[in-house]
Amino acid sequence: MPTALRICPLCEATCGLTLTLEGSRITGARGDRDDVFSRGFVCPKGAAFPEIDADPDRLRRPLVRKDGELREADWDEAFDTIAARIRPIIEEYGPDAVGIVLGNPNVHTIAGALYPPLLIGALRTRNLFTASTLDQMPKHVSSGLLFGDPFAVPVPDLDRTDHLLILGANPLDSNGSLCTAPDFPGRLKALRGRGGTLT
Image (cartoon, rainbow, N blue to C red):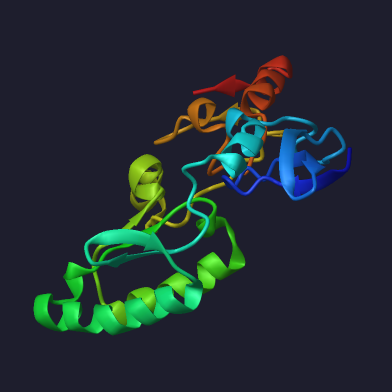
């Protein structure tokens, strides 16, 4: 059965995945043992990649509301509909009548870093929601208070540090998200094994 080596796009821990394929269908996912960074570790999200990809409720095409009902459309029709409807909404109700939602894995791509600021600037809306608004705000608050910038998130050198102080995060729950650290529990065990401390 053919396999494909990929980097998991579901968070910034960047774990290596080995996917088994049947045609274009993903039939299995496991940690890539040869990945120099994650060394075979994969969290439950990455291991569930085949189920996520094949979920019957997953949106695979844009949906457009017509006569009160959502129906599948192609991308040209979806963008034409947005172009026709968004300006009248903003003109009648103001820019905050529009909201933008960004989430994984969009925020972990180059395009995800380049295009949303342009869209947000064009719409002038204050309503921006991301995965961060749900699970990362304590880290941004602590970074803003400690370093003067909520985006100055420190990335610890887990494999060489002697003392690890964690504020505003629960890396055991997030599997190393915001630390870019696959197998956070294993890295903490290694820290303690070499005589290090965790606070």
